Length: 126
Image: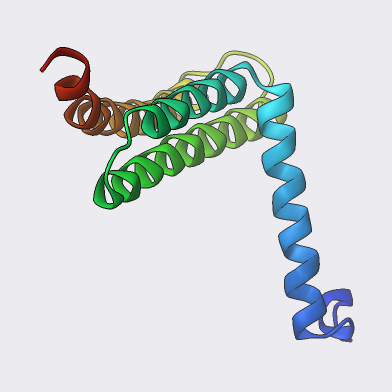
């Protein structure tokens, strides 16, 4: 028996998948505090990018690191929600899993911080 997605066709399935992904991204930035904070920082830094007229290469790095941080934050949130669904009480193994997911956010945030400082520090203090 074919699944529902196979019956709606390849292109329609991809379009539908895109809308589902957009819904998930919207849910993340409107319901999760980490998503709200990261989106606000992304908007603030993007406005700064326009104000300081950063180069095309700087824009590429800027967009990549913002996407990286937002993506890892969203994945971390999904992992936390899944862990809470599977085991809603404190459990050492679940805590370990959540800590590792949070560590992924830390790695991406540190990379973003370094790159954004490389872009904006000379303009602010140079």
